[in-house]
Length: 334
Image 1 (cartoon, rainbow, N blue to C red):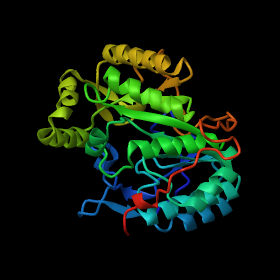
Image 2: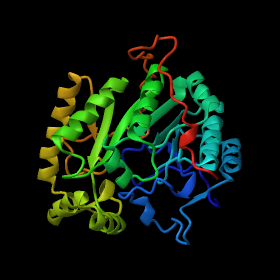
Image 3: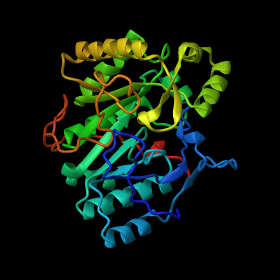
Image 4: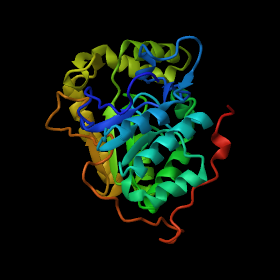
């Protein structure tokens, strides 16, 4: 990395301007079909899938020493900070430790798993300053493998969310993107909301898929071999142009009336499956044309809310919390 790292993002309204966003790598081995960041100019284009920034901790220490002090550290907007690569996880862990050592709360969003037990124990010890979001769009193993070939299995992510909640770590689940006609059926969403509710998580953010040229190309290529993805592309035959966040790059989105109707359906399903316990947030920066239905989805965790009291799941005492399975087997060799 050659430039400063503790910089705010101005492209997304769901991230406060005094939060610092840091990408720990260029590229990501999760290789999600719907990943918009894979089309960025800084993404590896020489056959490399992921390039780790190994000098971030030095940069961060220098910037903190110079007086730069964000309200929160957010990992990572354009890659996953807990990809199944030891080097990536090591850098992410060090950055979070640095932030917390300077009393700067830290947030991370991941479709991976935290494989190092000492780091998990460290997060528990600092749970009041830790905000965690688990990315999860489907419980169907075959569909998840097709859409997110390098990400952790859905059940591992649910176990991680349950572990976090049971130890007092503020944890939310991010169902982004929802693929029309593919992951948004009543049956799929009921199963997903029911499973999320069972973990103790109470905040769910969601937003429908939007297309950039790279995402459209990737989805088209995947759908040629996997017809179960074709309904998503067919839905976008009626797409409309929109600006991401109202001021970002141009995207293709489903019509506002269609999204408004479908969001009402999904919110109703979430309430039905959780007895009203799940609070659903619709991402505003991806739905600027639905201001009455959307809100700041707290992409990097709530701004002022304190950490919740630990919630012990069935079969675990409050002192023990939820055990996290041995996850080292999910890491890839260097």
